[in-house]
Image (cartoon, rainbow, N blue to C red; front, side, top):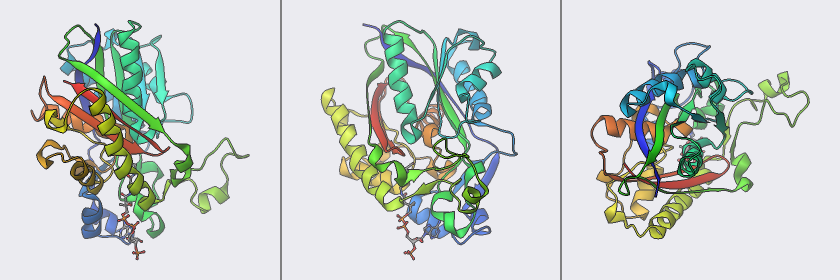
Length: 332
Ligand code: UT7
């Protein structure tokens, strides 16, 4: 039976490091508060205006192709997960395809925020197993820093997010001991406005007004405590569902690579599932929350550092805006 394997991964973050102390110079916050509540020490921002999610993804793609031993020209489909597309339309996948010289190759944008990589993984897996495509580029990339409220009012959201990109090259394998075992995803729109970016919006005419800018509906808004409660309930629930369906126990797992939204959320989830802390990958301290990029960024780094190895059984849970959530079980 054909399975989908991760052939190689890559990641890229912009060079501009923004520490908690840097943010504390702009609005009322502190390194102590941010580290205590989120685990974040610093994050990366794009160096200058004009750099979009597809630009970050371009760097990550080159690294992933190299690691996969795949030439860019072999990519026959692109899935681009992002909540911060370069422009309203077309999708960032089209911009990336053009930058890669992949004219004619289909490009699908996935708009599922922190769970975007998992949604994309499920689609790529189905495409590859049915024989439709052989080399799928799955990207998670975000530029948050151009839409953050750097004032006291926006501090709860602004301290969390960072820019970055990561991706996987996926392809078929006949090796039964390797590949994507299962991906389960969910959505519940009753929480849509608990973490959202209201404007510009096609629901309003005009889509963007001076008033929207003044009342800050052009910045993400979050009901943090509510999102926290949902995340700590849904991430263990969906993880256990995937493990049980596949006859896998927590002891069988080599590594857990959760979405990096808040270190406290991931510690809570690990405790609830009795996952030993040494099996859980955290890199939020360096990059903050990079939404769709966060899982592939953490996995790509773990592979680069030798912490994740071929043959490892890896669980990847996520929760985010939508609400959307899910978990993937993969043998590297
Ligand atoms: O990836 C997408 C999914 N997103 C998430 O999963 C995020 C989930 N939520 C969270 O991670 C947390 O709710 C936050 C980190 C956003 C906030 O942490 P919290 O422990 O829930 O804090 P809070 O919102 O309950 O606020 C506690 C206090 C408040 O002050 P008072 O009312 O107690 O005086 C806030 O005004 O902390 C204050 N506060 C801050 N203080 C310093 C909020 N943000 C900040 C800040 N710096 N940046």
